[in-house]
Amino acid sequence: MFTETWYPTRDGVVTSLSAFRRGLEALGHEVFIFAAGSRGARAANTDAKVRLYSGPVFRAYPDYHIATDRGPARRLLRALEIDLVHTHGTAMMGLKAVRCARFGKLPLLLTYHTRVEDATGYITKRPTREAALRRLIWQWHRWYFRQCDAIVSPTNAVRDDILRQLRREMRRAFVIPTGVDTGRFLSGDREAARAKYGLNGRKVVLTVGRVAWEKNVETLIAAAELLLKEREDLCFVVAGKGPALAHFKAEAERRGLAERLRFLGFVPDEDLPSLYQAADAFVLPSTFETQGIALLEAMAAGLPVAAADTGGPTHFVRTGENGFLFEGRKPSACADAVRSAIGAGAALRVKARETAGRYSLEQQTRALVEAYRAVLEARAGA
Image (cartoon, rainbow, N blue to C red; front, side, top):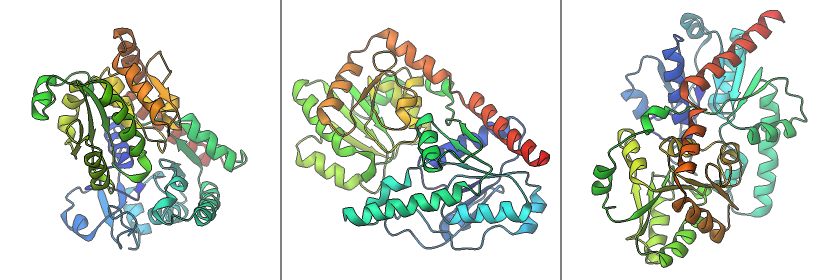
């Protein structure tokens, strides 16, 4: 597996790779990770199946590195007895994946995790330049997709976007969401988490994920302001860090919301099940998601969810049945959906858990293995 991001960075791609790696290894497969990273992370790495390739920091987003180091050599691939190359990005590590697949005459799959074209604001704020950059990104992606034996999309919405861009030239496109360890989120220490974060006596609305410009946090803050005026017992909790954390914390303080709109920063994995259990509802305001892994985690915990009606969440959420969708950049619509989630009954919570149960890590890993088998068999028969 090739990736543009790896530990210590934490994002949806890292979460997905880690989950599928665990799932594949549990089924007896061997997984090697080739990732971009800093020289410090490379020096500190003790995982024999992870190799980090360093390069300069991506200035627009300092958590990421541009892997200018030469990628894995042909002899290394032979020594590791690689059968298939699976890339999770299309930048420098993605190019290394193409080269390795060609050298080794191996099948190449791509999981399209990120709508890169929606993050052009990190490069330029000028609308005309953003539009030109988006066109260039899709030209690049069309070339990259054609190098692949198959594309894996986490949701139907993403697959349909790709097929439209390719004008349906792609022969194989699999929809395989990242699986969730559903049992892990069924329970947790609600009272301990509430005491730890000072949430006792509150109705808690939780969101989990990177605090980044593209995540639509401004809509969440505006919606929270509307709801906090209505209810004295309500509290919003944001778990996660990112490049926009300081900005949005300052914005919450500027609006006088800091006491009841709390930014926790990074929350360790082992604390997440209890934090989900400590909440009464979950909100995903981002319009950037190709899936939204935290959404399924929240549903596995039995939380009523409110999510923007763009991209990944539309694959999982049915309004009034297992959660609530809202018009993504409209604070009043977000507030309405959160209000409905807070008031949802036991039947909706059960449906949310049932939905998450259909996307367990084991089930999704087996689907990925079937995709691997299909491209290997196609190569063998070519």
